[in-house]
Amino acid sequence: MNMHDTVSWHAPGHQHDEHSFSTGLDSHPTRPLPSFLAGGRRLLVAITSRFLFSDEESFWQQVRATASADIDAFILREKDLSPEEYERAARRFVKVCDECGTTPVIHSRPEVALRLGKPFVQMPLPLLKELSRDDDVRQGSPCSHRNGASPAETVLRSESLSDEKKRRTLLFGTSVHSAQDARDTRELPVSWVIASNVFPTDCKKGLPGRGLDFIASMKAIRPDLPVIGLGGIGLDNTASVVQSGADGVALMSGFMLSDDPASLANALRRAMDS
Image 1 (tube, rainbow, N blue to C red):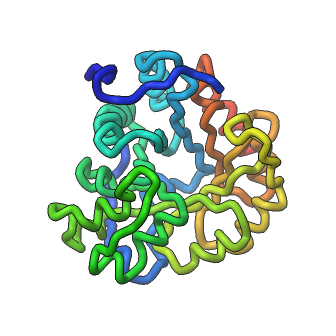
Image 2 (image 1 turned 135 degrees about the vertical axis):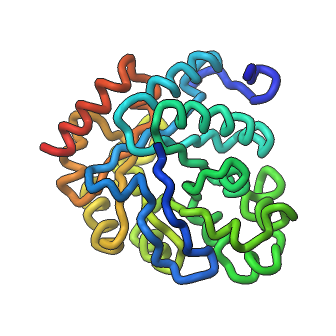
């Protein structure tokens, strides 16, 4: 697929295993572990960022190299894309992940996950709250969003995706940035949380890192869920993040800018196990 005509591009400036997914959005928030979290090892998650590349094919080459590394899941972030652009990118992304034997995770767009038959969705906490409200789920009430219809509104209004049984096939992760965020997830259908940002990072310039105590507090609030640290994480601090209570780490620019994602993944695993 040539995405020059289909996906907005910006120059830089700045095997999943089948599982039974039976818990729905409007049921009890305790959820089964997704297959990629149930392997009994520290978790290693990669996240895309096409803003780090000057052209799309370089981005897709890096996606394939990263998907081929020993990672547990790969999140297609790219939140600025229109729904149509994101779905086109997601189809290519899922194909690469399937070919490389890693688990693709859709970001913010549950309707795309449903259409592609992939159960894992990383949702921003406010959107997950929208999607989980009984009135919204049952009645499809409008939700405001800066780019028009929100992902929650899109899935709720879609005639072909309105069937509750289809919604029940999804498993959600979310991001937490404070103790209150973590407490809020207790009432939501969450299977994992990404705690961000642990250290200062160029992706969030000017925002100080929340530190290792933040990881410890997130795990204390949600000891029942996998907690994955994100933000400024590299080989020099991965071990400390895990020792503070994280069940694994996630990297965006670390993987996207690596000359050898496979070697990086192996080194990160050694650091997590040290």
